[in-house]
Image (cartoon, helix red, strand yellow):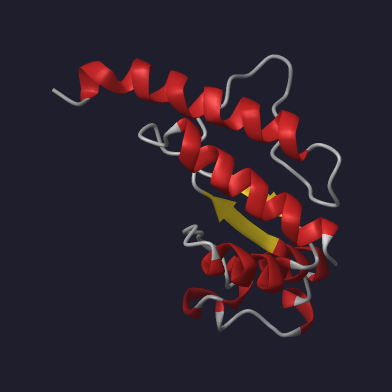
Length: 128
């Protein structure tokens, strides 16, 4: 049963995230933060950069799948269309929607797959 394997899956994703944290720390990229009194399960490993679209293209060239899960900020969703325009000016949310990109972090990610992601991200920023 999958639920019984959840602790193992969470552990594997945490390990993948820890490697990303170490290997990407010196790049112009914001990685996930975790408060000291919490534990993250890394369902997603979402980074933030003002070069998001170019980074996504570089990763795609290397056959690295990425995701943009929140491309439209919540205040721009149809359910909020009745909110006045003045009340819907949320520049930080708009900027975040333009800058976030999720990297592969799933529990089945191999060491080689992880290395491919890291090298592609590093190459993107070092060849700019």
